Length: 404
Length: 106
Image (cartoon, rainbow over all chains, first blue to last red; front, top):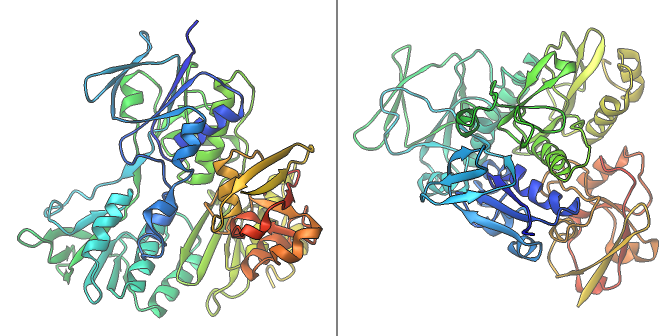
């Protein structure tokens, strides 16, 4: 009898964890991890932080060493998958070759949303998702040159901090009225805006980009109010879109991500999926949620591996996130979707350490902890362990100066 | 060859060869030691690589740094010799070191 083969499409955080977890679950069939980027899966979070700032080398980004895959007979295949023929049980690669599978896992991730305006093709207009993207940005980021960042989300702000460290002149253009508008309370947005201004970044809110101009290389960013902002380098960070085309063309249900259940199974029960490409119903948020974060990718991958191995595990971990900018370490426990009240501990108007707790109908749902690891640890525990909601009183007793 | 032992909560031991300069978390993930997740990749941001150093070794290994201490302080399984393994840089003098894993990571 020949061994069963699991093919994992996508070799970033989710794919790499899925392969490792399959072996931890004792699955002894063949594992092929297909990726089109780098010989060995690497970590993405440091790309916009330490790697862009020149503080870490590419080799240091490897999630696990090449020997890890070798020793555990996990084949790393440098290829792109073009199509899934699920009834026949094989994939078509861009080389034209086909690859048979018994189990299939989709970990196709997400790609940066493109800004479709005139001049978007000019050289010097960059996006940030891969190490190669960062290598391009770093090559163009000479001290004293002028960088314009389109989008005041986490990626945009992390890039701003890293480019300031490299000695660039940095402007952030945010289309809405405040940075981090989609993900934080106004108090937290105002804090990050203040910190970036203190660090010498110019932040422009309500700034809508209409075009990039220049001959072959970008020179200016044109705004809808007619203003032209000079730029030697532009980095666009306006969110990501899940890579769902392969899944959709194979007939899997897609709804802002490949739809998975609590066991990481897609609408075809024989195909699992994990990571930024998935969306899953979460009762506490009243709908399907697509998470963009490494911890969630890892959690889903572990569950997907258990499912393939015939075991029963469910995706349960609390979503959490982190961001580093200058000397500010932000740690986020939970999702604040639908919050109707915030409780502050510390003063975000003056200090560089505080926590913003988010409540919905009087119960804690999330916390943004700025240079407050203790609050993060406590919040994560309160949110994970509470079989019932944690109210304001309990929060105040757990965190002594909350709401003070 | 320098060898470090990871003892899981249920008492199973994983003896792993290490090289000077690696982080102990990296060693654990490269060798598939169960119970060490290292979600944040070594930033002391997640607390999922908590280990408890054998008290006989605590002086040799040293205490947690300031950021690390903040992450450990509120952990319910904190012990006097707790460390985050991502902040432990392996030294050749650690041959024979034993660390215990907590029941749950953060």
